[in-house]
Every structure is written in C-alpha cells, then in structure tokens.
Length: 482
Ligand code: ADP
Image (cartoon, helix red, strand yellow):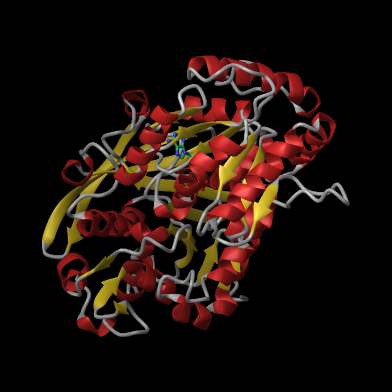
C-alpha cells in the first residue's frame, strides 16, 4: 500500500478559504478507496471549531527549528470519514483569527513545512511520498532534498508538488533562506529559489520536487505562457515534460442535490425543474428578492478578487439589469473595492440583486441549488470547483474559456444540441454580457433549458478518474519511470 502524506494549509471540514480545502479532503479519501494510505497534515488553526478540537487526540510534541529559533510543535490526530488527519499545533503561529495574511506569513509556513518533515522523523507513519500543495508547503521539497539527504530514514522520500494557484508564490527577501530555513546562499541561484533577487517558495517547490502537477490540462498549458505564467513560465516550460494536468473532482457525497441537507427541497435530474423552482422561491424570499418562478436567477459564489472577473461584472451590471429580467445573488468576501461596488449596486436594484458579503457554506449550497445560471467569468482559473458544483446541481455555468473552466464547460450549441452551459473566449465585459443575454433568452425555452440541465447533471466530475491518475503518478514517481 503506497503511503502518502498530503501536506496542505487548509482542509475541509476543518478550515476552508477556497478550493484547496475541498481537494485536501476529497482526494485523500478517494485515494484510500484505491489502496493508497493517504493521510493529511494541516496546521491546527484557532478557527477550527471547538467541536472538532474536542475530538482531536494529542499524540506527542517535539521541537522544530525555524532558523535560529527552537519552537514547540504539538501533533494532534483525528479521523474524519476514514481519513487520518494530523494537526500541527503551535499557538504562537496559529492561535490567531483568520488563516492567511499575517505579517510573518513566511515564518508561519516555514515552521509548518519543517514541522511536516520533523513529524515524519518522530512518528510511526513513514510516507513514501509527501504531496505538497501551493506556496505554503512548497518549501518541504527543498528542505527535504538539501537537509535530510543524509538521514537514512528520510532520504528516499519522494515529493509531488501541486500548483492550485500560481498567482500566490511566497516571495520574500533572500535573507529568509538563512533566517527561516537554515539554507545557504547556494540556493539563491536560478535553478534553486532565486527569483529576480528574492527567494520564491513556489519556485523552490518546482525545482526540487520529483513531479509537478496542476489542476487542469488547459492551466498546465497556459502557465507555460507569459500571460498566465506569473513570471514562472520559463521555469515551467523547462519542466514541461514533468508537468501533469490532473483535473480536480468534487465530492459527490457533499454536493448531492438529492441528499443535501442545506437545501429546502432535494431533487435529482428527473425532478430538477420542480425541485429547483421550490428552492429558488425560498431563496428569493430569504434574500428579499422579488418572487417569480420564471425570473432567471443568476448566482455567484466567489472570492472577491481580480482573478474572478468581477471587474467585467461591474462594467456591465447596469446593462444587465436594464437589458434582461434576470435577478442575481452574489456570495463572497474579498477585496474592499468589490465589496463596496457590489453593495452600491445592491442599493440601486433592490429586489433584483442580493449581495452577501460573508463566508456561508449553507447559503452557498442554497445558491447552487436555487439558481438557474452560475456566473464565473474568471481571468484565469486553474480548475475551479464552483462550476463543477453548479453542473451537479443543474445550474448552468456561464464561464470564460480559461483553465479548468474550458476543460469542463461546453457551450450550448443550438444546432447540435450539445453543451452543458455557456462560454465566451475573450476577457471582455460585452462578450460576457452577450453570453448572459443569450442564456437568459434561451431560459424562456423551457424544454431546451430542461434538456441542458439534464445533460449538466449527468456529467461525472467525481474524484474517481482523477484519483486514479494521481495513484498512477505516485507509482511512476516511486519507480522512477516518469
Ligand atoms: P478558489 O479556490 O479559487 O476560491 P474554486 O471554485 O476552486 O475557487 O473553489 C471555491 C470554493 O469555495 C467552492 O467550494 C465555493 O463554493 C466556496 N466558496 C467561495 N466563496 C465562498 C463563500 N463566501 N461562502 C461559502 N463558500 C464559498
């Protein structure tokens, strides 16, 4: 049984800010079903609920070196739905409200990355592969390869590194190498961590790992291009033969309209029309939107950042409200400028626009179940889970053709009847508006609409196929046969 330690900065159901959390639970769980002993390690954040904290068992503690500092590291464990989770405890780093965005971010994740390695030295579980994710755990590979090479127990461990989002890289002054990692300046070279004079954690992850994956085929291609490459396109072109696109899935148990307890009325592909209408009317009442079963309702559940194409929406919001009879519900948190402008639009269109600036899992499920369309006009999108959840709930996605959106949404073709949603190719507000108008127009044709909804709900974006691809990649890494 292949042993894999999945190192992540967040994991559902304990702590979640985005898609990485979903992946960090669903993938290991699926892998376990295929004979991989996958276990997850995350920080023990203060924001993890008391209910979970009370169920955790203390395992042991040891010290972890962070540059010249010697820090306490506790290990807690807990199984969730058959997946063993380990939690790294240090109150100085993790007893804070919030997950990211602190002044000492580099130090917090330097500690966590080394704690992952020290954990292996101190525990009975000896992984053959450490699967690292994004910049927060990228430094595990450089540390392993440079400082644990003479450790008999650890020198054979391989690493896989997954890019969930290349935009966030962990770029800090070169002094962090010595100060936080005890690494020498020999690593400050272009095939190590050096990045325009700074140290770049993700670059270290790319250069020192045994295999690189990212979360869709299209994003794997796109990031080798300067437009999407975030200044690492050259490194990624160099590594292109060892860069694998494996699409994320979604957890079909959590996201299942026929059993979801967060929604008012359960439904499946055959009862979608009535089921979705009941949920929609309920949501409209709940959010003070004008009631109407034939009012097309467009949903958005998103981090409010530039990545998500919100500036396109700002630009055409008034036209959208003028030109169509659609209503809209937005759920998200993020940049102040978007929060302010959407709040402003909400006051302009009472009864037609509901803006909810919070993180609310239940409301998110209600939106997926109740809306007719789901808008996701991302500037870039490594994989995107929201469009997959929407498809599962029969909410037709309207997306820009980039990354995982391009790989999962096929625009409806009126001549062939093919398609599971709507898409546009250029990052252009009016192209988006036109596409939304086309969807709203088609919504009037109930029969056609219902048939597209059926197609959408029959798609299979569960984890099965992807988990088997990861398993095969792990085997190749272990057999040196990549
Ligand atoms: P990203 O990881 O870039 O944020 P994804 O589409 O891959 O985008 O995943 C986002 C996940 O987070 C989805 O499960 C989505 O429903 C959820 N989500 C995003 N914002 C919120 C929010 N404000 N409240 C509840 N869930 C949210």
